[in-house]
Length: 435
Ligand SMILES: *Cc1c(COP(=O)(O)O)cnc(C)c1O
Image (tube, rainbow, N blue to C red):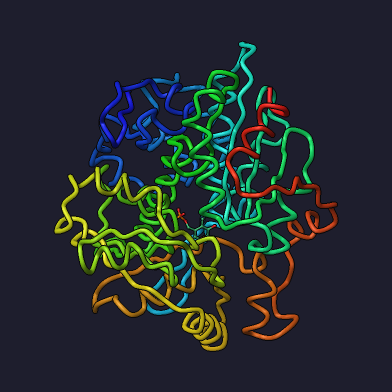
């Protein structure tokens, strides 16, 4: 299968090239030239399949032309050594818990899959690849842990100084080996700009092989479709799969866009809900038809603090830039920090379910929008313990147990390279450090 750029001014490339390049030369995002629908027979028996088996069927639709079936199966099963269960929260509302992976956030799925796919493509040749990743918190940890110790690959994690939680920071600054953390004196948008600029820099491109592990990379982005099918399957087990509405807490919109791909593959989703924090650029677009990116502001749902969501280009492309169509497949909601706090507190005290600040946005949007007879699933994108300080400031100290996996990270020592936000500084560093 070939991949085209959303800007459509460069030739199509192979999967391997799309994965190793990250971003197309015309700054567009790669899109598969076809989205293969899954057969009716798959949806009929989907409730009898495990998450891993479902993911393998979905992976074949994306990557089956490029990777032999046995290799792909190993890739998928090795990536998904954890489940994404559907947990009831209240009448007709379910949490799709995406935080049972190694770094306790949904980005483990794409991060691990991409690491394995890239290493599959590099097997047996001497190429050295440098993975650049900008993070507002969770991407860095998922990608760094996914790639840790993978031969022939070095990962550079760029993160905004002082704007990620201590636990998040520990998860990518304590690893060492082939992982370098760079602490940028700036915002997440500065980090993302540095990474994007690096891919377009001729001197860097001629000296180094660079790729991105942000959700602009198809290898990270596409596997996020897997768990939407799992949500459907687990609801079908209960006979609740009809009239399905799915709410997604959104920042860069990779996660939600993967859901739109799932729908295009035949997954019966009645409507998507895009939940934003105060960084409400897409919310405004859905209301007005105008897309007006602006500087991000810091919120307590920091992994959604994005002022110019990169995957929006994919959404526009999927629906031929039609605001009418886009606003009919998804509905937008936005919440202030105070509203997020209130929801998190209320759901904890009234339903005994502990949300994280991101999942709280999606829960609230779903609870607000769900109509009689519909069944709602919200994506719980991270374990609340990843945001212990924030969550305990809402529900009281000592109420968030630290999972074993996180406790391990907290023992490590932080190692990072402090850097200003000038591209020239970053470029010089890469030219000196990277292979
Ligand atoms: C990354 C992230 C999001 C936003 O996902 P996008 O794909 O960027 O829209 C939401 N919640 C958490 C916990 C995240 O880490």
